[in-house]
Amino acid sequence: MPYSTDDFLYDYPTELIAQRPLPNRTGSRLLLLDSASGRITHGAFSDFPALLRSGDVLVVNASRVIPARLRGRRENGREAEVLLVHPEPDGSWLAMVHPGGKLKAGRTIAFGDEAIIEVVDVVGGGVRRVRLSGSLDWPELMDRFGSVPLPPYIQRRPDADDRDRYQTVYAREEGSVAAPTAGLHFTPDVMQTIRDRGVQVVEIVLHIGPGTFKPVAASDLKQHVMHAEWFQISDAAAQEVAEARGRVWAVGTTVVRVLETVGAQGTITAAEGWTQLFIHPPYRFQVVDAVLTNFHLPCSTLLMLVCAFGGYEHVMNAYRAAVAARYRLYSYGDAMAIT
Figure 1 (cartoon, rainbow, N blue to C red):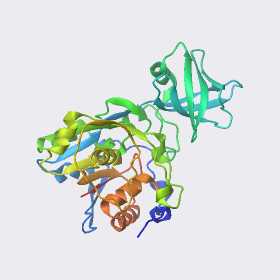
Figure 2: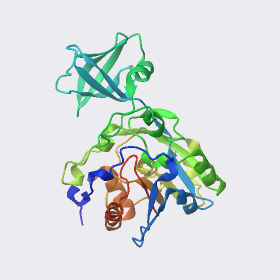
Figure 3: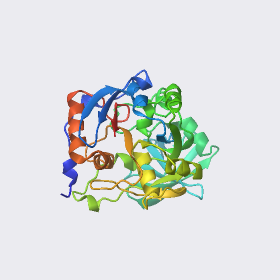
Figure 4: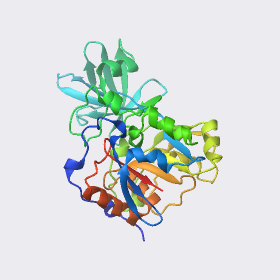
């Protein structure tokens, strides 16, 4: 049966949306879903390492969130916002701006007396190409005037704690404007416990763009144009996944997309580039055997991917069970493991 976008709606009270992280990264709850039977078990994230077996491979996204949200002033003195999305080879950036209707080509945004961002042209889809001038380069501008681009459902401005907590402990490659949130639960001690169990931890990179929060608008899933995101998987990482003696665990939907992009033909090879892979039911997985993920927005491509992996009915039942049990939702919320 073909699915429509409305099939991925579910009800939840807005107070379940986690507005801040828990004091302890590992303090989240964990819902375990058996994709074969639909059986649901409630536990804690501290239980997660025990789910792994010697020979398993745990694949994580080592992308690092940049302080990409910049607030400056337009020529008339009013506030404007720039969300940097991706650098271009010529030194410019693709960005989203607010207010979009006012910031046409040629308009500028000032950041103190040190820097000016000029809108060079309108690319489309809400994206602008912007250029920087002044005494600061892009990293300096983000360091001075940037903040962590928290998701729109977190109803507060970011604070100093978010610079650390909206970042995985293994983040190393700067480039994301949203965190690979399934990884936010890990600490160095948890990672060491996992390695001590004989599990190989493998790093890949996918730089997450703002399109990750965009709901699917078309009722027919085939009409949805997936946002493109840049990824990289090294020779060593590809080999470790290909030679896994146990299960391949993906930490987050971003890892699933990378592994299924490069493994589409049944073999894992090193690669880098852009992926627009849109995974939704029905989909036959080639690489991934188990997934750790957070809970996702209704009608999002992320929820659709999870439903493709765990089974539509099983996953939607699990979401209803999570809401009934008052799990904390979304980026700073609780976790779900699907085996």
